[in-house]
Each structure stands twice: as structure tokens, then as C-alpha cells.
Amino acid sequence: MIDIKVLENKDLLDVIAYENEYFNITNYEMFIETYVENPLFEIYGIYKYNILIGYIIIWLDEDKSQIYSMLINEKYRRNGYGFKALLKLENILSDKHIKEWTLEVRASNNAAIQLYKKVGFKSVAERKNYYKNNENALLMYKKL
Image 1 (cartoon, one colour):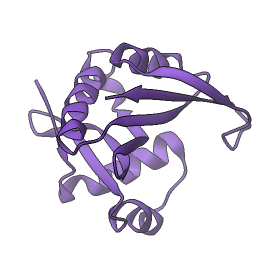
Image 2: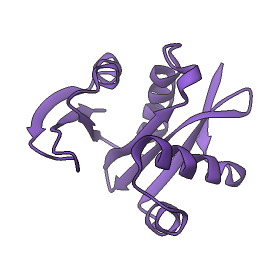
Image 3: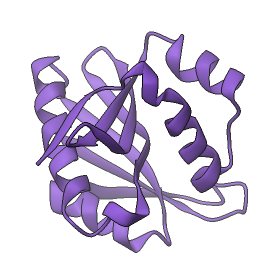
């Protein structure tokens, strides 16, 4: 059983470490300023028996949301936790009257693309040279 809830403060450093390990794009001060202090962002922890196994960072703007970052710890992948977490987050967003959400995903990240499609996202565009290594991104969309 997993639970998704607003990230507990005790787990903030773990999320920052994951962001650096997997995405190599942040430091503590930048993370706090960008995601924690900005009221348009929310960070949800994905917990299994109260142990942080992943997280989802979302941006909210009126009736729209965007997934900025999502990660499941490697040892918990391929067990359906990402799928379950996204469905639970979808319920949270619906309660907030969010009508649609989007995300960008590396064109080469087949596992993530399949996960998002399984949840109901559709690929609607490709962004050329989107990432620092010039890899393309797929823009995916879902109406809630």
C-alpha cells in the first residue's frame, strides 16, 4: 500500500538528493527558492509504510497543473507505485478543481512514457533539443 501526501519536512533533503542524483539540476538554496517558497508549487511524497519511496513536484495555475518532476526510488520501480501515486494525485487535483495537466518527458525515457500513457496522458507535441544534452522532450497532456 502506498500513500501520497504533501512532503514531510523531514524528507526534504532526500528529495533534493534525488533531484541531484537523477537530474543533476539543483542545490539546496535553489530548490528551496524555486519549489518550497513558491506558492505555485506543491511537493508530494510517495510513501510506503511511511518510508519515502518517491515524490512528485507539481506546478498549479488556476485550473491547470504540470508535473515538473517525478521519481520513484530505483529499488521500488516496476511495482506499480508510480501508477498508483499518479492516480492518487489525480484525485487530489480533481478536489482542487484542476481540469487538465501536462508534463515533459525525455523522448528516450520509454518506461516513464508508458507509465504516463497507462494513466491516460497523450503525447501532443515534441520539443526539439529541450534538455541540456539536446535530447528532445515529449509534451504530454491529460484532461481530468
